[in-house]
Image (tube, rainbow, N blue to C red):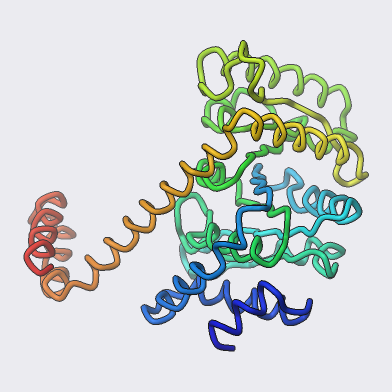
Length: 337
């Protein structure tokens, strides 16, 4: 398929053609070849007028919290409500082999075969916290194809929560009722990013779930006073983070969860914060791509490549400071530009 055929297939193709075109487009976006990157940029520019109408939902949580089960239950519920759902599931890449299991799709066995759902697992490729570098671009492809709810599921380890909250309209944190000290999530700095905290598997221990809900609600109120300025507790015209209980396995509470999401969307749209958040994200995305492009150009510079092996050896042997080697290479790059 040519880039023009891919674009036409995404925007106006039949169901089968659209899926094929989306897969082709996302594979093109994930490529690191320079000619593919040029084609991908042209494709994104063509798709841009068809994007921006979907709601972008980020979901994170520690491994075993039930993210895949919850997303499948939510996706099937949304399809019943008349939505089309895209799920971008970011799988961790092995730091040893570089490979990725890409197993999320297999855990969503009912949603993955539904004609109104599109699930794309992608390897994190070692980028910050496991959020794939090209996830933002993949979101635009899904939006252009007419999916009106795009869910980004992140690994839930490291700093992935920060990255996913920076590319979505709403960030949801899944917690377990018996996860021990609930202050741990606050210590990690994750809780202050959350727009909604969901205590999953509430059916296992109802008392523990209620206790966790009370503790996290109290903590969020404290963070509203001293933490995230977007969550000021005394401002009635903006959204205040909520804590709810669900059981994704039993399908309990999914309707209430979506009602909270709708309330968030309506409130943040009315006060202009949703549009402002997207504008800030677009600028942040631009600078991220600039940083990545500069790093790539630096590595490909002939003067840098000529000096790099010797300087790396000297740094390894302790004969030169790492900062000195870095400055030498940067000076070489500046002279060769």
